[in-house]
Image 1 (cartoon, rainbow, N blue to C red):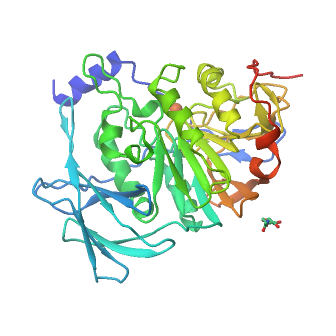
Image 2 (image 1 turned 60 degrees about the vertical axis):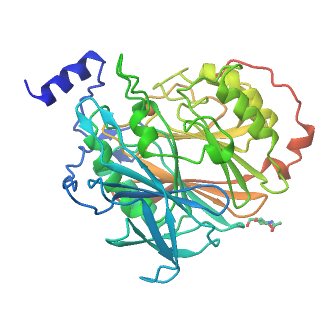
Image 3 (image 1 turned 90 degrees about the vertical axis):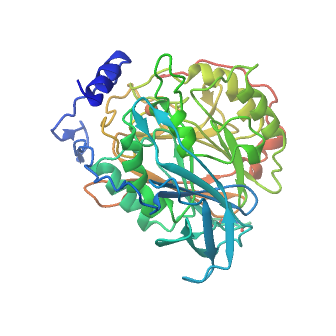
Length: 447
Ligand SMILES: *[C@@H]1O[C@H](CO)[C@@H](O)[C@H](O)[C@H]1NC(C)=O
Ligand SMILES: [Fe+2]
């Protein structure tokens, strides 16, 4: 038996989630829209060639205070962790050195993973850069310091034909930052799929910062191997040190007038946990005169009327919703459920004008297909729900108004299917007259 055989046996042993892909389009009752079926995983040629110092899988992320982290992989061990950059094509006026890492996973050994922080950079400015002292030129744009700022949001991406169309549509949006609430590559122990995912997203992720948090597909737990989040942490270093967090699995950052908190659904959140303590301290520091908008992302939704993953977020909600409520969280963005749902403002299981608006957007295009069955009747807190692939765009216009749109992939046209203006809690008087204690309530479904 070869290595692959051994790995497959191990995968079966740990309960690899084999999923059959239905082939027929789904027509939902009462709708004219004929929903297309899932698409197969793309067969991406591996560009990993030995002895090569060519940068692969280039992606960038915010690294605190006008800095950007450039991450890439080389097959060559000798390639240096250095980035040359500047504001003119081919003319590099600055150079930054960084560090590298690599990891092993069963019989797989990763390439050399480079991390170089560049900056300070000017706001809202295009920079040209080169990785490893040679090779092709990339370019990036830094986010603006002021509103307006535009985010794209899509979770549960994977690497199928639907992922490609989601990425294409995102590319048509002139966004500043991509936010990803977990489940990136769907590698699921097959480590070369992390590499192909990195190559698939490079055209977008090398040009705009991608800020991610982890989902269940990042866990890759193998008994006795302490492999949990190993690949994710090695490949997707986020600015946790910069935000005083002890772990890459939860962190926060400020951009324009928004404070954005990325939490972990699969790391401890009880009241004695590191995550709980860090979150409390982080929220206490938020200055709403500087960052009037407070956004939070994590993987497993708390308010979800899809039949998929019912109740999975309850424990985390019981532990962290009071903190997020007391801090006046405007918007909570999650994934996991492969569908789209937007709620009214809710807290403690009930409609609450000072609660957060929740958006589940786990419909990036992964191989598992859509979650099409819903609870009936639709709960009063659920404002819009639909099982289709797509992505979201959040344009924060100013300190009081944001425009949220959800774009259904819809036969490869970036159709805008749901749109709503959101006013900030900071502008609605909620931050001062909100009760300081949230009564935890079961989520009411149906009248
Ligand atoms: C914020 O943007 C909204 C929507 O464009 C606009 O109606 C409102 O007047 C703006 N507020 C300020 C203070 O500029
Ligand atoms: Fe998930």
